Amino acid sequence: MSLTKAPKRHRFSLSIINQAIWHSHRFNNSYRDIQEQMTFRGIILSHETIREWCHKFAHHFLNLIKKRERQPHDKWHLDEMNIKINGQWFVLWRAVDREGLELDVFLQKHRNKKSAIRFLSRLLRSYPTPRLIVTDKLKSYIKPVRFMCPKVEYRRHKRLNNRAENAHQPTRRKEKILIKFKAPQAT
Image 1 (tube, one colour):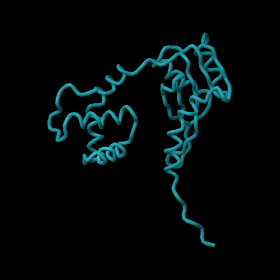
Image 2 (cartoon, one colour; image 1 turned 90 degrees about the horizontal axis):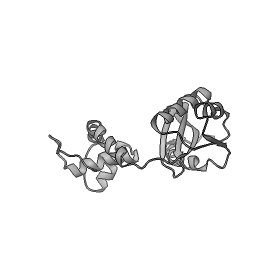
Image 3 (cartoon, one colour; image 1 turned 45 degrees about the vertical axis):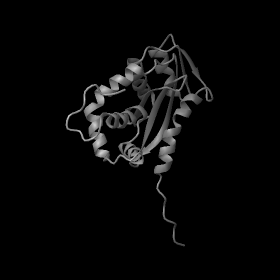
Image 4 (cartoon, one colour; image 1 turned 120 degrees about the horizontal axis):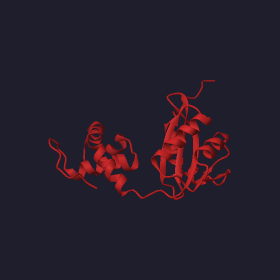
């Protein structure tokens, strides 16, 4: 995957720019993570430079990635997890197919029927209707799935949804890293 024309007024070669942008869009790495990876390879650049490249060439790369991306399977796993951002609790909704391909990630404030409808409608706009939807025991899914996808087979079970639970693991790892150490209390 590469840019077709050489970008004007850039100090680095096309291959370096391609690599940095590809890491950002394909693996969802932060700009500072990509900066660290490039530094490890002996390429010194700023995270702001990577951000500017990503904004400048984003549409080109997203179109290329979508063309090469495989089509999702017809079995979806939907799940949600609570996550704390800047001291406030949010719900991170996630959908993956049977092979673990992430279909969509959506951050909302609530975990109710209205939120489930919003998430499911986003999914159905982006992908064709699946054959089977698997969720955990959250009751907020029942009516939206049955109303929006009447011909879809729907299963609710705690252990059937492990595919979506496994997709949460990288987020949980990053969340664990960000937990600050507290100073020991004086006694």
